[in-house]
Length: 234
Image 1 (tube, rainbow, N blue to C red):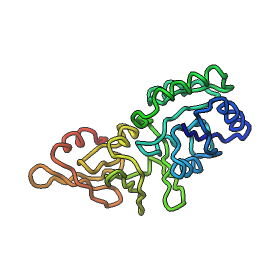
Image 2: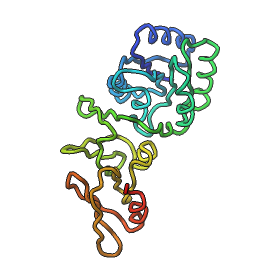
Image 3: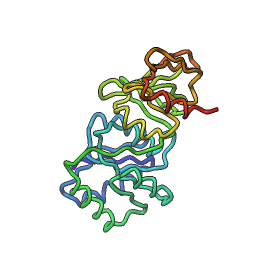
Image 4: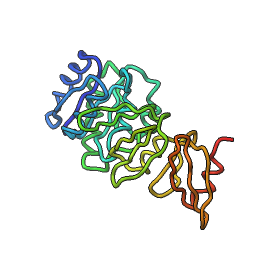
């Protein structure tokens, strides 16, 4: 197994790297001190597992995990705080380790990773505050509250903000599960942020066009229109 360690504290990274050296079938292939670097290394090195700190500057561990592709590595959260455990396991993270990490507890984690190796990719992480999108060597930090609409593009999602758009390597279905009820699908290939909707124009055969505050227009299929109308804030 190829592992990436992500923690903003160098001593914590060094300690975990030393402890992981006890497992001959696990190789640490890189380290990152922040979320942006973690995503760049994940894309470059394609690790099997990321040992990921939760509390980090600017982009926290949950935001990093939600920005990874759906077929990305397993996630093991490593933190000094136990209040994130429920969220981590709800998101089906591979494991959740509390600092200081005990050798016996780490061994159980590695055993769990061995059993799951070769299985399905990670599950949606859930409710990020931000997404980090790497585009041609630049990491763009996107606040989810600023997203207006989403468009599926094969295995990517086109994230539309005011005046620009960015491609994130995730499926629309999985990303919507993460983003929660603030976003709603309007079409097989489109979804909107409910707080960005300005009007809904009915079209022929029950279809509609969703007009956003920016002036952008997004198609709405008949099968999604009633749900959209019920979900719009009064």
